Image 1 (cartoon, rainbow, N blue to C red):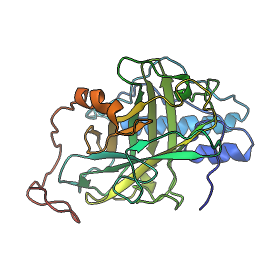
Image 2: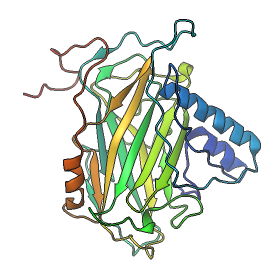
Image 3: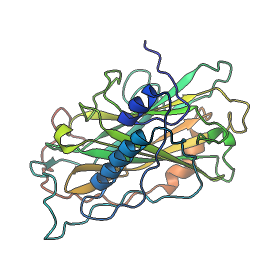
Image 4: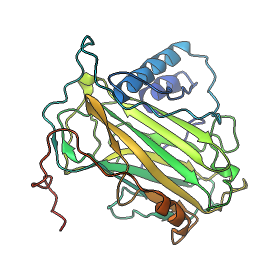
Length: 319
């Protein structure tokens, strides 16, 4: 098994390798609200541009995580009549809403996957991996990118320990890593076959931590996706090196609160899935019980051509 090195910042996509070769890495935060016709794709374009600018700067210092909340990239709005044509969104067949899955050690549904994890502090070299996977709910000729938001919450009524703050310059810096790229080491299919542009952003308050992830590709590098395939979006690696920090053994609930998928003209929201919650240091997962009850996504409404009478290829209809 190949050992995956952990670097002293939260890592993301193509810009990481270029900066690693120079012996210095920088971090650019996810852009704030992106308005206009393309929503998520516009945010991805800004991420790519920011990565290129950061690579050209060379000596820039890694940015610190802050407590200032940035809204998620805006959902797409219809293009103005005089705007340039949007990306091709034809050829889609919608079977169901997208679904989100999380699991420790392996993607959900695979051998070894678990929704609970106990942080082991007796080995400072140990790495715990959280896999984020999803189903598109549709066949589409292009998949341009994806945005995800995760929350880290303490037991209801408690506060989150500083062990769970990984931002650059903060208590547990350097012990969180995000991986997106299709390097052949993911145990499930990925919706991209070429390297793209990605970026994480972490915010911390005593009530909750929030991790935003975004990854996407240029239009020429996109690939088709199928409704019957469960794809890996990313894996989050936690290095257990500073267990002396408050909260290392604290029960914590991790929720994949929402995602936005880009298939072309307009973003598709995802807020449901049978495994959107996992826990740490809570053997029965009880720390997530109050948050599960509070999570009640609105009813899903399909946009585009639907085929409700036919299950996605490779799946069985649920009665």
